[in-house]
Image (cartoon, rainbow over the protein chains, first blue to last red):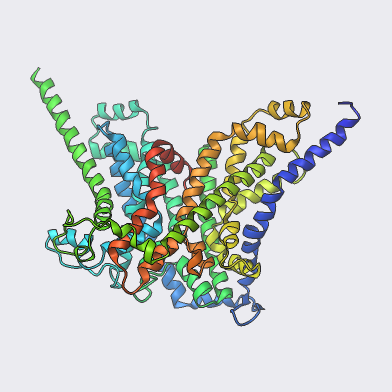
Length: 294
Length: 281
C-alpha cells in the first residue's frame, strides 16, 4: 500500500466501523432511546386513547403525588422489597454456609436450589396459584400441622405474603449461589485464625464472615431491589393486583393505567418516577463497584 | 486417643446434621416440582383430594395431548419457538456487529455510541412500554410476528457483552485478512465470529431462555390466539372458567422442558453465567 493511499484507506476503515454499528444504532434509537424520551414527553401531557396528547405541564406529577393508589402502590412495592429481600438474605446465607462445608453431593444440592430460577416466572406463578387453592399443595402441608385452609391469595391480609413466598422460592437458590461464590473468596486462614482465637460459631459469623461479605450483600440488595421493582409478572398472574389494591405494586399500576385504563400521560409520569428510583439504585451500585475496584 | 475419637465422632455428627439440613432445603425445592409432575398425570377428580394422592390410581398421559387437540397449544409452542429462535439469531448477529464496531474500530462518535449502549442498558424495558406499544401500533405491527420479534431483537447488554469479548481479540487477525485483500464483512464473518464461540454460546442460551420465558411484551402485542406464545397461552388457559387443572399442570411441565434441558446439560456453565449477568431480563 502506498503512503498516499493510506489516509483514504483509513477513512474507509472508519466508515466501515461505523456502518457495522448502524443496525444496532437504528434499533436502539427507535425501540429504546426513542420510547424512553417519548415517555418523558408524554408524562407532561394528557393523553388518552380518545384524544391526541395535550400539554398539561406538571399536572400529572402533582396528580400522582395526591393519588391514593400511587401511594398505596409505593407502599406495596416497599413492603414487598423489604420482606422479600430480608427473607432471601437470611435463607440464602444459611443455605450457602451449609453447602460451603464440604458436604457430599454439594453440586447436586446447588443444582436443586438453583433450578426454580430457570423456570419461566409466568409458569411458576400459575402453578403456585394452583398450590394455594383449597386442597392444593400448600393446604396439604399446613394441614399436617393442624392448620386449616388459609386464603393465601384471596384475602387482603395474606395475598402479599402468598406472592412473596412464591418469588422467594423462585429466586432464593440463585442468591444462595451468589453468596456461596462470595464465601469461597474468604481466605481459609482468616477463618482458621478466628477458630484459634476461640471465636464461637455465631460470633465468628458476625465479626469475621459478615464484614468480609459486604460487597456481595450490597450487590444482592441493589440487584434484588431493582428486580423486585421491575418484576410484576407474579402479581399480574396470581392476583391481578387484588383483592382490592393489596397486591398492586408500582409496575402493575403503570401497566394498568397504560394498557387497561389507557391513560397514557399519567402512566408515563409514573414510569418516569419509577425510572428515577431505579436509576438511583443503579448509580449507587456503579459507584460502589468503582470504589471496590472490581 | 480418646479425645481424638470424640473429635472424630463430633465431626461426623456435624456432617450428618449439615446433610440433613441441606436435604431439607432440597426437599422444599423439589416437592412443588414433583407435585406438579404427578398432578399433570392425574385424572381431574384426583387433583385436589385430602390427603394428597401421591401415586395416581391411573396415569393420564392424554393430559399432555388434549390441550394440543382442543386448544391452540400447538400454535403457542410453534410461536414460542419461532420468536425465541429468530430473536436469538438476530441478537447474535446484530449485537456481534455492534460489539465488533465498538471493540475494533476507531471513528469519531464511537465513545458516544458506547455511552448510548451503557445508558440504555440501565433502563428497563418496562419503563418505555407505553410509547413502545404506540410505536408498534403505528407501524401496524400489532398481532404480527414482526411486532413480537423486532422490538426485543437487540439488547444493549448483548452489544456490551460482545464488545467486552471482542476487545480481547488481537488486532493482527483482522490486519492479516486486510493484507490478503479480504473484504471487511468477510473478515468479520469468517475470521472474527468463529473466535467468539464461547461468548456467542452463552449469549445464545440466555437470549433463548429469556425470550422463551417472556410474558409482558407478547401479552401486549398478541391479542389474537393465533399469535400467543406459551406463557401468554398458559395465562389465558388458567384464566378460563372451567380450566382442567390436570391439563394446566401438564402444559406447565411442557413449557419448562426447553429451559430444563439447557439446565440439565449445561448446569455448571449456566449457574456461573447467570450469577455473573446478575439482572434477570
